[in-house]
Length: 114
Length: 136
Image 1 (cartoon, rainbow over the protein chains, first blue to last red):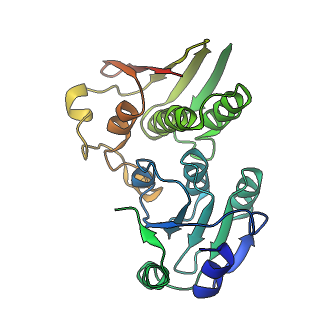
Image 2: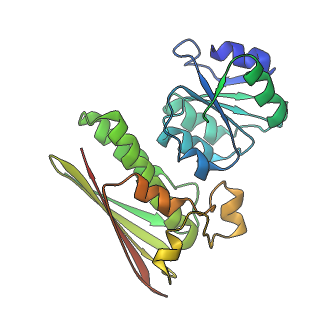
Image 3: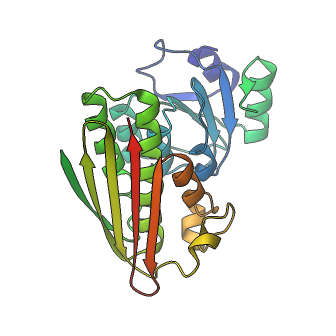
């Protein structure tokens, strides 16, 4: 699934879009628990989360996650955006709940991790 | 090659800086990406543990031709029962740490999963030393 399609489905504001055309996502993972994200061994993953802090970006960097959607209208800070840009991580902000965002993406063909 | 870093307990803004630097170095050295991911996830978990539980810590990394040896030493409360701490779901993390998305009792088991060799030594009330070895 194209990142632009994710953004459109979730009415999400694109915050860091420099990687917009560079890759697709195939699998979605919804979690506010970064400890769980760090246990994944999955490529082409979209992280859907309401955990909006610097460590979310760090976690994505370590876990090779290149795209994050912040749900529940959470806003990325300036420091988060700078770190995401440094590591080529695309970030979006959606006004939807995690449940709604996940449902829409699942319905559109994004696969679950397990 | 040797790399050294300091970690301040409680400073979540700095957590992950060492892991990030190590990731860059390993990429430059041409290490297999899957191997890099395992190494940096284990190191990041260890960094977060020091920030979450200890007063301060030191990371010493030695990169050799066929392996990376990482030693993380902290000054802090120590771990009274290491076997218990290795169990998935066991955690003594504070509310603040949990609010950051950590402290679910997954850190040490995940470090074990992502390392070839792991040794943890601790003196209660003084320090914890974690030694991790990953082969390329």
